[in-house]
Length: 423
Image (cartoon, rainbow, N blue to C red; front, side, top):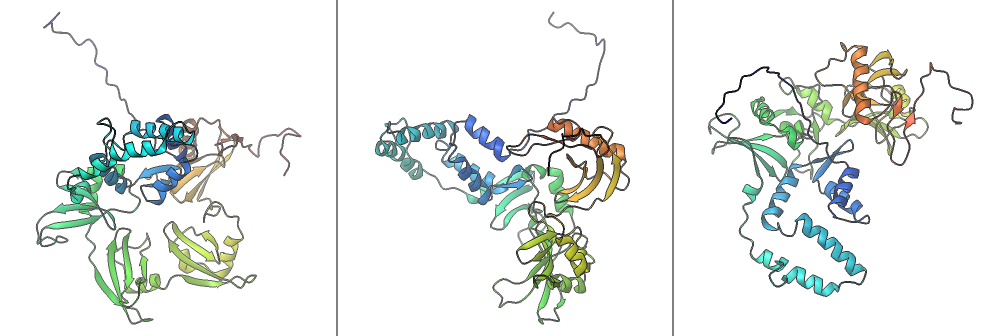
């Protein structure tokens, strides 16, 4: 009945949490393209290599993470060539190209229609370009994070721009201040709260640290897109030597001695007695590593760059190499046998941080979890959650491309004769 007041018999509070859709992988992106009728089996590899090589996406594990420049380009194309990048138009074009290849459509006529238009039904490329207005690069490159905080994409990558008091630290005469965005921070991770955290962080000012005793050139301390670094101020060098600070180093307490050590890298540990090739230690984009000719091995800590001796280096090179520069990681903590899988569980450090593993499945350790205080039950629970997400049984390893899932067997379990694979 309209206007009738209803009595609340019972009020129940329910918590419902949703998760964002997973990021595309190469496989899921190809599947999405297939569903939209875009591309063909012969072109998918080229599409993927293009968006990766041009920096439109980066790979985080298997996931494809969009870069800020991709948003800028997409906005420009949508505003100026919307009809030509429409999914339906692209899918129809794919079908037309198939017909041309099969001899069912005349290519010259189709190309003429695409370029000059088709009796008002299709605005051709020529007319589209001629009717383009003046694009404002600054507007296209701007994404508002929150009021007064704008993300822009420049020649050297994305940055935050704010305006304030011209006399305040870090601001120019127009009141403009630029705040660098850490390398690897995905667009969806730059929340208003994260942006404010970057803005409120202590401002790192450029300064002269002192003189490099080996060259006589000044050593400058600077802040860049990849964080604080030191630079050897050799104005005659085509590319001055630079070195990023270690993660354990603080810009506030960073000393001249530390700067000299960083600029001395790579450090020669010694010669391999078999090949007589120098073994060097250095820091790279993915962390500390050693190099022997074309062969490389990861180091567990940055301190090893300066502390590791030749016997230790040879021991690491004697270990098997796993994918890229990674070596078999040394367990940081042992949790014992997982009652669900019967496999031994340990914690290790990898390229993307700490994780626990039973040899079959890996599970990331949350950043707010203290490894020293973490219990075995917590480690087992992390693996159980990961297995459930992957749809795996305890002891079952994820299947590699083109291979069936593999069941690992605990050493404490009895294996029937004849069931073990021959080596």
